[in-house]
Image (tube, rainbow, N blue to C red; front, side, top):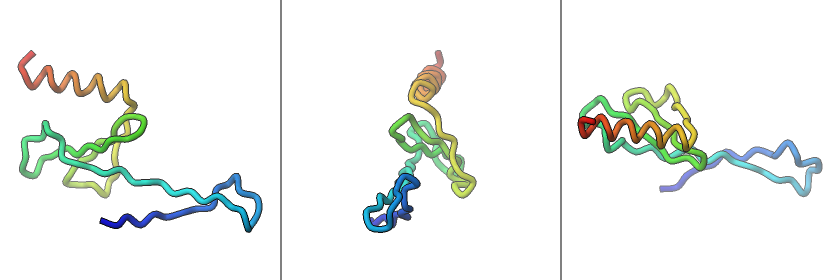
Amino acid sequence: MTMLLDFLKSSYSTGQENCVEVAQIPPTFRTSSYSSGGDNCVEVADLPTGAAIRDSKHPDLGHLAVGAAEWVAFTRCVRREAIGG
């Protein structure tokens, strides 16, 4: 799979010849292992600072990014509920 990136000139580049260009790499979403399947799925993506969460039925509405500590706390709660604790 080829990913096209949209490069923009860095605001810290001052000249026209030696400019730094940057691009944001979009997150790669996957279906959560805790989703029951079918049409009601939560998708997650790993981020350098935590995770991103979105609704699989409406990916165009964006995602919710959470920090690493919040993601760990959330997944602990989900696991605890899944095993009935």
